[in-house]
Length: 371
Ligand code: UD1
Ligand code: M6R
Image (cartoon, rainbow, N blue to C red):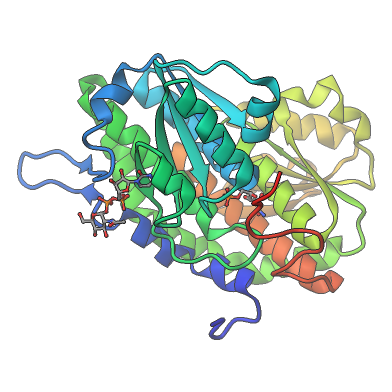
């Protein structure tokens, strides 16, 4: 039931304040007098000690689920103090990459039925790793076959393009990072700030959804383009990859997410006065580096669309020649949850304007159960 919406993708994008709320429900504890804020993940509490003792945490997934894990990687590394590596499920299988008994392997999947992820799970089990699932589907193969895990509780996702599951996955993995790091006194303040940030997040998502019309206007400008680049780094490298994936899979427009630090190692050659480029430059430790990326793209006459923190338009938009998307600021590690929303809206409107099937893009299936 799409209710007042025309498409499931549109409904699911606008549902995110609620889906994020249900992902967090009962899992964040504000604490009473003298008690600190904390996270309670019922499915993990008996396994946290083992996870903390592991030598490595390996994230494994495909498509949007992989991107969500990439968004959560920095905060997991920071709060756990354990090296975190990334695997696209099919690539791990192609290489028969190493997996050890001392590994914690985290399988991220909305459907819980993706063939490559499921096969990578079997492979990790055979190699003795502790297997943790992050899935949206209770009773799915991945939920059943992992040792423990966290259900997203984001509600059923129908649109082939994953939207609300992505933001809930990032939040679930941020909570995973908070739970693993919970016994480290030195990061207590940081963890409490993130927990406060999580409480505020649904409200901030509601705020960023107000950009709907602005994104529709931007889509009108981009309707006939062949290609769109998206530059990001740090916490928002994943936002660049995921924004580009949305544009390519539903709007059927070539789009590429680029790690901004790689700009001079190739992508800069593409820049001219015709190619539209989205640069994500919200406030975090990478902000000044992104300002310099914007200047260099500007010097090559790039057609820039800059996503920045509210109030920063003047400091990111050199010469006033670019378009700006201003978003509310949240705790740095949660910013990817906010920043993806305008790009989801852009992909949605581009698709409708270009006359393509929003909920069932050609050649794609919601859950990829064959290899
Ligand atoms: C659970 C209940 C929830 C109830 C809550 C009350 C279920 C599905 N969840 O939620 O209805 O309100 O207790 O305390 O009954 N798991 C995996 N792999 C996965 C995902 C989960 O093995 O990929 C396991 C978990 O380790 C756990 C169980 O499934 O044993 C349920 O997980 P989850 O729903 O996340 O647990 P709670 O949030 O505690
Ligand atoms: O169900 P899963 O999360 O395992 O699915 C993984 C990918 O197939 C999926 O995210 C795909 O990339 C989406 N269509 C992206 O919107």
